[in-house]
Length: 169
Image (cartoon, rainbow, N blue to C red; front, side, top):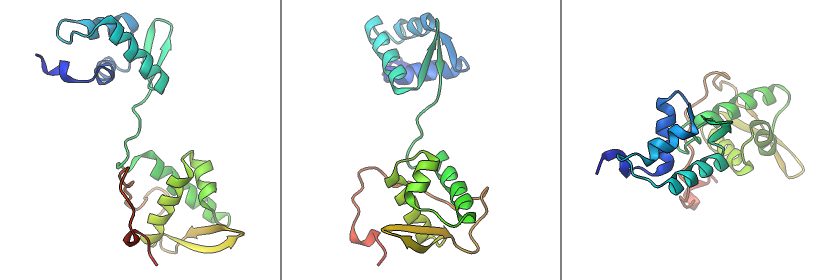
């Protein structure tokens, strides 16, 4: 059995489109998936393409499929960290920010913004400067790196339980 046949169909489509510069005709994708080397059925190929279109990874433009993006992997520094860092710089210059502000500006979930703030605070890059009702307000700490040089950051793994040791007293 060829090595390529061991990949899941969605990954096969992603790899095929990457080799074609992100665009290919739908018939070419079907031919690739149903070839002897890969031996997927036409039905499986159709379900795979529909799945990737629903996920937003592919867009169908007439007879062509266009590869839009690979979902950002958690654990990598990724784009969200850079967006959050630049937004924190902009909002600090205007008086401060909360987790809801960052989540809305950077198009991330609020719990992700809270986690990011917690880690940046533990690194000494952010400080709490007050409250507005129950909302905490943060600003960049003096001496924090510039907007184009964010500090190192790593998203926690999904499913990792938090213990009392994870929260500073």
